[in-house]
Image (cartoon, rainbow, N blue to C red):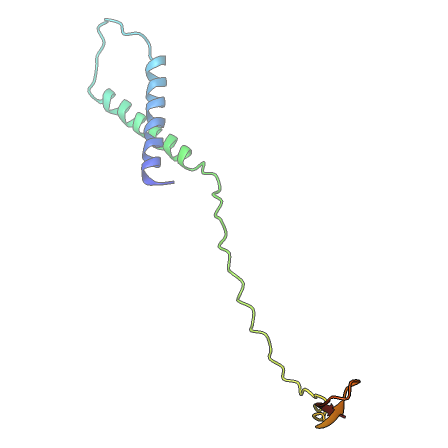
Length: 117
């Protein structure tokens, strides 16, 4: 509890005690009584003591305070492992062996054609 809340709580407790004493005090009567000046001081001291005791009771009734936990973030994952594997490839097929020949069509005309093996 903060200082201000404690002060207000103690003040309210003192006011409630003073109000209860004022409500239950006997009515004033005009009689010849011997009054001492100490009666006022005793009443003020009793009110102050009651206020202090009431304030201590009120301020001691604190509820437990929930504190939100602090969460830690997980560390980042490690980078993936790099694995080098040997790659085997089949050799490329040999290039075709080609050459040009003279060929005749069905009409007897000759032309050059590419022939590959």
